[in-house]
Length: 229
Length: 229
DNA sequence: TGCGTCCGGGACGTAGGACGTCCTGCGGGT
DNA sequence: ACCCGCAGGACGTCCTACGTCCCGGACGCA
Image 1 (cartoon, protein in one colour):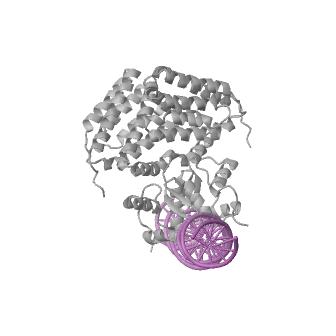
Image 2: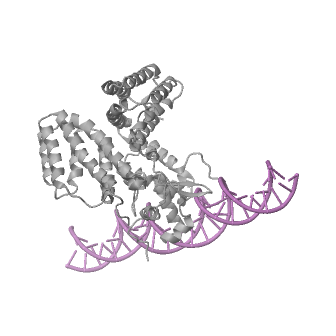
Image 3: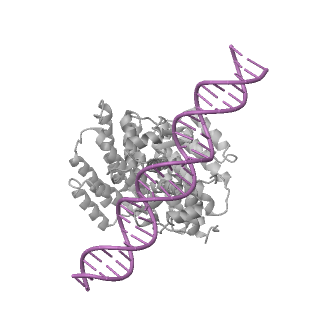
């Protein structure tokens, strides 16, 4: 008989997760069990599961089993990075869009952060800024910690996602152009505004930070070509 | 001669796209050709391609071929919808986060829209508002048209994505609670502010719009359970 | 008794072949 | 000139077999 079931295997597997109330981390049925449950061959089941894995909906551990995933947005880093790189002009335009979205989110949030940040958190932010010239990941941690108190998990994931994509594509902009000093100054100014609980100053400091980032992109755009592979 | 290649097949396929400079819409090598190029079996190739399709990186047309995709973010609607539904409390919290992000983006953008919207566009927005009580999709089109002039493709995709996810999960909030009149009033107020080129009024109108949406979510949270399937 | 090693089973990973389904384009019939 | 049917290419599904990895229990040694 034909394999027309109306709903794709992927959707049926998702429905199955919801029916059973499987929480992230819970074990999924094995491939063989899914074959019976869905009435499909192992091959079809595997292809559907692979697609779900790409979306972060399930997590596969070789030799152990398949588990419900967290659907964290960072699984789509490759997708966004691909889209950015595919854009005409080496994706400079897409990169600019990306940074602009980050700016929108962060300048919109920093105001409420200024009113709620505890001294403990401020100290942690200071520590991250101090290590920023050595540790490349300190910048990411800084922005993540900044908005952790907002209680908005989605925003955290988005900002992390955009950071990852930017730093994956950034090397194609040309020479490293390390201006660590300026970056540190910018971040320090943000922390200072937060310590003073001055929302407007924090917003302005954040705008300055992104002004530098966008300037870097604009310089890359002016250049002819970033030396293709 | 195990299959250890270091890089996954997916990554190698993506690399292949970049090497050949394939633009979105361009035809990909066939499955058989990919088998030779990557030195893998058809099964493995198919699984990798399926994963890329889930990410929107390739597009498959049965009986025709495989093509480079646009990696539009709306392919991850199922992923986000899954994540929202998986959250504890029926995902009410995640839904609130989602709307909050939309609010951040839209209130941040509406200001610059107010300064650039042409009369033609205003008329189109009016038409969409007028049809909003009949056409369910008019709301989506309204928000898309609003920010089209910003020239930020990523923002358009994100707002569309969030709209889709919200309206896919929204039915689980409980009874429809059609307050079309209020919604229309809110949108009309936004257009009025744009027509007056009053950025601050537009921002405020947008905030009011989202205040209503968040109120709906809060009412749903207060309710015990949204009647499980 | 306690611990480290070995081995078996379970589950995912890869491979290769066969057949069905869908689309396109070409050629012949009307 | 138009329509229909057919062949070929490409994706969709299924089946079988074997490899790889992880875990836990059995075994042997100290």
